[in-house]
Length: 193
Image 1 (cartoon, one colour):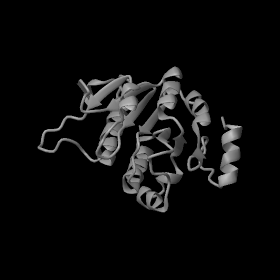
Image 2 (cartoon, rainbow, N blue to C red):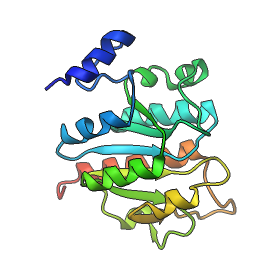
Image 3 (tube, rainbow, N blue to C red):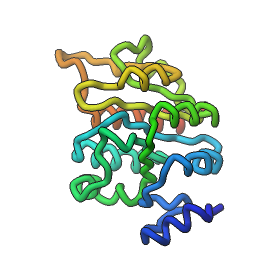
Image 4 (cartoon, one colour):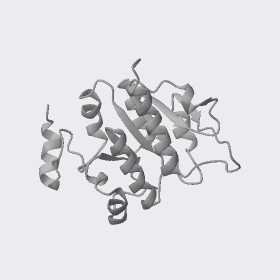
């Protein structure tokens, strides 16, 4: 079922490629419709990712994993730039990208719509592999260096960490995002899902 408001935005931007018009820059008012159109929504929330190379790689992984929308704050975050488009190799036009004014408020709204938010943090008590990622979920990733801001972390339902066996403490945000997204894909495709 196509959404008239999103279709109108698509015509304005000349990017109609799917029912939710990926490639169109959407806003927080579109979230309710994106979530309600799917039985099990799969979103990715980026908390202040600033490097265009990271965003491009993240969008590419999000496209491959079947993410319904990528959400980022308008401030202190990179938007869709030519560098992002080049690195994303088409994914910047195939994944709905939503920039929001207030990330914590948007996360609360997603929770009200039945989306469980799983944040990545060194303070997580469980590993990524210990949490059920089969239902309506939002994976929440932090910025380069700092990770999740305190309010963003406090807004998550669960905090998880990626187990690290080597000497480095963490992965690059685009790599960590790929690990998290594909663990969700693995779980969602299992016979028990």
